[in-house]
Image 1 (cartoon, rainbow, N blue to C red):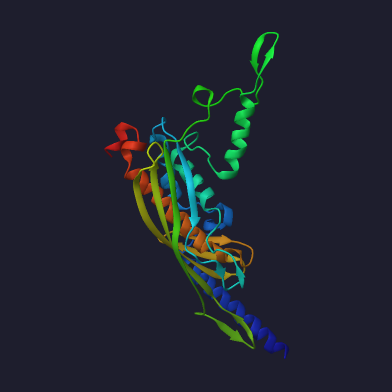
Image 2 (cartoon, rainbow, N blue to C red; image 1 turned 120 degrees about the vertical axis):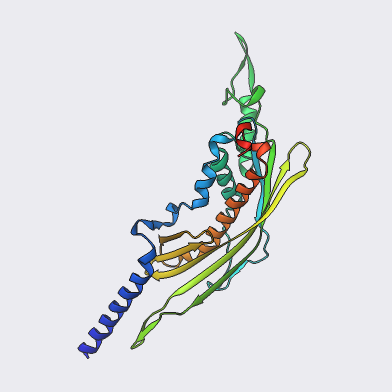
Length: 277
């Protein structure tokens, strides 16, 4: 009986070693990251535009929601959207990566209320012995002492996604002790629009799709492959990373859409001597 248990344990160890060695052959150890540390290649491409942007324009973000109509994550048996609910926040971040500091103005519903209150306080004037004096909290504001306005609105929606989850392939069972592999492939479509704030006219629009494949290869270790060919490993708490293929696909699709927006509107965003490149 003891020999049988050790045989099972030894067989599992050999199997896991073999499979992990196969999986890790194309991925460097340095690519093992936490969920928060993953830096996708498209984000680096966005950052390359920062020093070439015109400094006399401002952008803001409009509504940016999950319009797919899918709410239930059936595998977990509870109602929630598969795509992150931080879509608008992510778009703010992606635009900041490309345009840099002071180029994006915050118009999110919650923050603009706070900003408006601060603006009112900053324009509180009172009569003193030395004349009228501004006593507001903010002494310096935007142009002519006002809140900076936006020239362009970036808005859009997540218009579709599809997540395939399946198990199997390379499984091993010995005396009811088994090892199996699970995989999720997520495809996300993002629609992005550029709107002239002076006229409300749509001056550019695109639809971008991206996909990410995620595979559970060990306890709390997930391997991801993106549409752009990137491969990286993520260390995460058990189960958490199963939401990530759709989130990564959304981030990549949105960032690619912003890259297209910049490339197709060079006359609006880039300084003159860069536009011809």
